[in-house]
Amino acid sequence: MASFSEEKICLCALNKIFGYEPRIASALLECFGGAAPVFKLDRDALVQVLGPGSKYTDRICAKSLDMASDELEEAWKLGVEFRGRGEAGYPALLAECEDAPAGLYVRSDAPAACLANERDYIAIVGTRDITPYGKEWCTRIVEALARSGKKPVIVSGLAYGTDISAHMAALENGLDTIAVMATGADTVYPSAHRAAARMIAATEGSALVTDYPLRTQAVAINFIRRNRIIAGMCQATILIESRARGGGIITANQAFSYSREVYALPGRADDPMSAGCNALIRSGCAVPVTSEKNLVESLGFTFRKSSKQDEDPGQYYKGVLKDRQIELMSQILLLIKRNRRMSLDELSEAAELEFSAVAEMASLLESDGFINIDLMQRCTINRKK
Image (tube, rainbow, N blue to C red; front, side):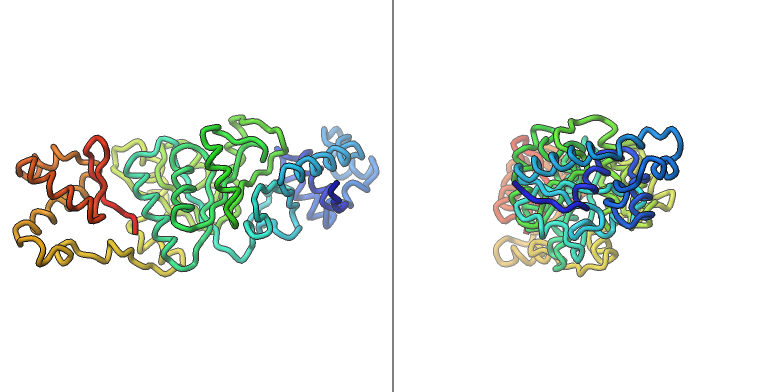
């Protein structure tokens, strides 16, 4: 049986009581200098502090402490650690927010390292219906951050689309990642991401994090509330793609309200998947992402090119192919850059070349790592190192 301090039990109890109104818990912690003194107040003092008729007065009691103690014990058995506000390991930036939770549940094989305050935390958020354009840029940004030398932690929400793309790109590029969940630490939503969640929790320096008690299921309002934690614990938030309304926009606006840096990937003026990003940029709430270099350097990191970016196909194939072949190869690469997921048929038509010639050059570009060709013969620039 684990042993928990009085303060931790009281913080857990406050988190359960004021889960949906964390500002009250924050005010109490600020007023009394901790959670334990709150539970030592008599009823008259509680009425004076919370106001007459408050629904919370009767919940600040010994029964709530017993329930919190049981919760901590159960979490401990599941390998989940509760970190209360003011305790070591609670994110310092998040603690600055008046609506920060009284505590966080952390599921990680190395919980002591995953929320260290000396680390850099960057949020990457956006739509669940991510497009190839958004996914490519999400990967490019994570890869550029991984090469920066600072190794920031990538924070997102484990949802479909942008979130899971950011988490997986982080792990694939040697970066730690934090998944902030809208459920209890014992429940993964969506269930399709259980394997990814296990991978995150098993990676030293990465973690699943939530302010919701155990057995909390996925409810719409929880996702909206969860976004404040993503924004609050990060010094910068990057919005990849978003419709005019959506969770990514909410997170970005929340980050702006916390006076944190906000970046957004611009898109075509008539693309509904970029409407939110374009609106944020237009309003002055977000800085446009115009290149990996500008973004990384704006974040205060050092930009380093990938090996493939350093290589010029013209130089790479010099002496191997004829000048005319190199010229056509460069033309094909330019077409692919301008038209993501262009098929070999479309490339042939656009370049005004025989299909067999285009297919042969595309195959060579793929084998040398410059492009990827999927099962539908659609081509994309390869951003892997």
